[in-house]
Image 1 (tube, rainbow, N blue to C red):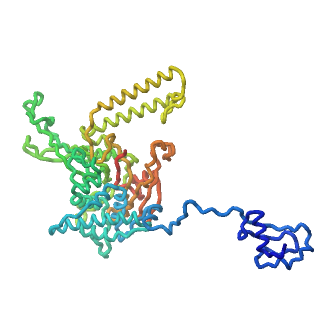
Image 2 (tube, rainbow, N blue to C red):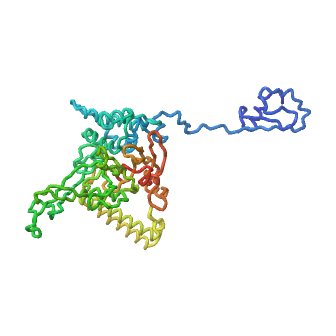
Image 3 (cartoon, helix red, strand yellow):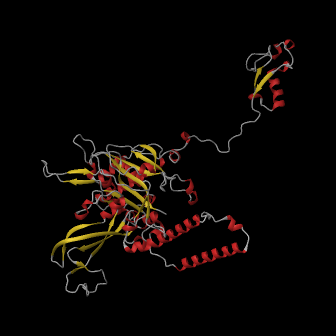
Length: 553
């Protein structure tokens, strides 16, 4: 009925098809009707319907289903608060304020050390009492915490003006400028060592220590002399033994006579054993002194082993003169976070030059490393004894897993056939397994409790550390070049143990190709573990200078 107009037609179509009138698009198929899409203003009464061949055909387009409001409302990144947006996008970088890449790279690596930030949050500066150095260190630590919090709260690059200024006030040597007035490049390792040195003097007290390590980590036997957050998180207790090369050293005893039947009448020099705290461990690249100078270092473990021994000249009480001694260091307490410095820079004497001042040089040779560092061989006998228990247990479990795998048994969750099978033999096998489990449980119940080897370390710690951050240096000039930070992504290494099959591997190796980020000041880019392992040096590309490790759970 054309007299009802377009609205009546659309209402009729809605009743017949379920398509709402506002969603209908009606177009003519028969000749003599309107042209194009039917408009609401069209006068259907003016059409000569009698001249149109029956049946009159029209085409209607439209959806009969009304749109359903989504259960979860779509939120655009631009509409999120900055602190929420920062959790979704790539981590933010730090603006270079003039040769401050040394500071930016180390700060990005320390950003991935939660215990340090937890300790900083509970830090209350002590009264300076007229000590300007203490005030400068307190301002530095406060600026560091503000910078770390700003990085987490901002999706854009952060300008570390306060941290740079407080660094130059606390360490005036880092405020040096070139003849043209521009800030000079500084050493990233020097900044790290100065920063943790300032933190060791300030981050004391029960509050920061418990915030960083928890109640279990603050047990006296675990701390083993660590009195501040820095030494508890990064500190290694080093046991140094000096033995005189020219005399037969007496074995360390309970204070009895140094000479026994075999050394009767011979001069004897007791070993000199001392303890000290180190906040990093050095990888010697160039080689040792004396007999070790020709050692070719190709791996980080070789460099560390070489740095823990050496020769020195020292006074001998038995000889009454100076003599050559052998220095041997071992780790007597392990930290939850371990920093390894590659000794790429050294001072070279230039006696033939006009000023005779020498020059600072860089060692370019490649030194490889993997994603896991085993420190067992670097530890003292006492620490080795504790680590060996967990290592032997893990080795036995691995051998048992391989044996089951070779037999075709399910090594993940048990064999369903054995679990659901019938017969006396299967029941006997189940009883044998129950007996084995019972014996293992009884054996564990009578095992003596082992002493901790360091604060914040798990009881079954095996001496394995996971690489999570790297500071690299690019360039041949020790006083120039460029520093960058490489940090493992938060989602890496967090999968459950049953998800190992889904983890990407590097080639045919067992090395997991996890996600990383490279921080080139304010520019942040994703990368992979295989890119990190290429930072071993040997050319003009970035090469590792500081490696940051955390205890592997």
